[in-house]
Amino acid sequence: MQPRSRQRIAVDIPVIVTTVLDSLEGTIVDLSEGGAQIAGCGLPVRSQCQIDYDGHVVFGTVQWSEEDRMGIRFPYELTDGPLFDRLEIARAARLTPTAFQPRAIGIRGMPSGGFGRRMG
Image 1 (cartoon, rainbow, N blue to C red):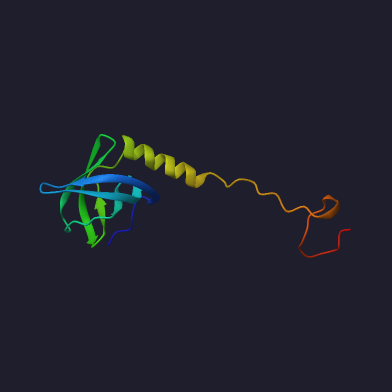
Image 2: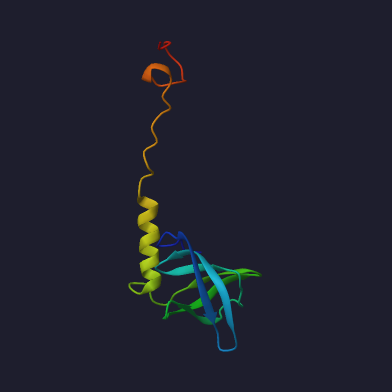
């Protein structure tokens, strides 16, 4: 098995997965330019499908499947469109530092708790 060339990013994107015979509702739970894991539905391995999101279609092939989730490989990497935009937003949010959390302030405006000399 080859290692992934792209890191998958956790997302929560509701989609419709369509095959020749069926349309299923699912949720993309992780995404990269080369593929996705979809929860909430499953198709047989090697099935061809399309993922419909926000009026845009991405084609894929099922690489692995369990009862309620599956891994899809895209034949062409995502480079634009609504799914690519969501991937970029999720990737940027992941890289954004968390908000500054000031330390608790005790009596006389000094930091409270911790080790060291008693302040006060």
